[in-house]
Length: 210
Image 1: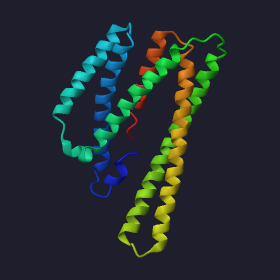
Image 2 (image 1 turned 30 degrees about the vertical axis):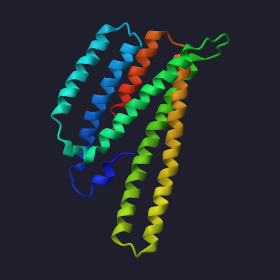
Image 3 (image 1 turned 120 degrees about the vertical axis):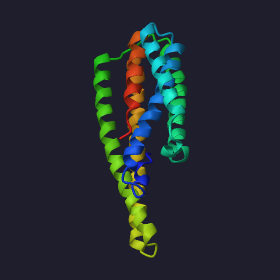
Image 4 (image 1 turned 120 degrees about the horizontal axis):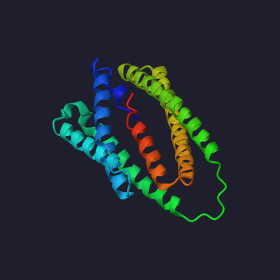
């Protein structure tokens, strides 16, 4: 869940600052993850590894000079750091599954690609839906906080957050579905293509700061 809606009341530039800081921190932790992932998996594309090593060094330099006030008490950094640490855990689970011997594999690669694309589109749509509901929930909560005696505003805030919670759970389900489809597809690919696919997917994920 993003922090952006919480910042709107205090500053008109807050959403822009949030977006910039989110992208900066995502770049830092994504490139750190990419270097670890490529090294651990013995990637044969040395140029790609060196490219991410250079990007990570640049991101670290930028981080040393970053203004901590732009990170809302470190909450954004903590959230993004945790996300990429959990990605490393999932990488190990995926690798173990892919390495399992399979004697009777009945997987349609093209159908899996189609399913994964469709699920990805559904995730994008659901993300937009959640962001809109998140904003509405914050607005409803602010109205209630400004007029605690109005029970109707309290009910509206409760309903808004309940709806947001339901849609968040749907989003998590979609993400789990996409991850499972990706793992199945990975089992049909040679090692280098597996690595390339994961890197591309995580690169795209690291830009989701809108």
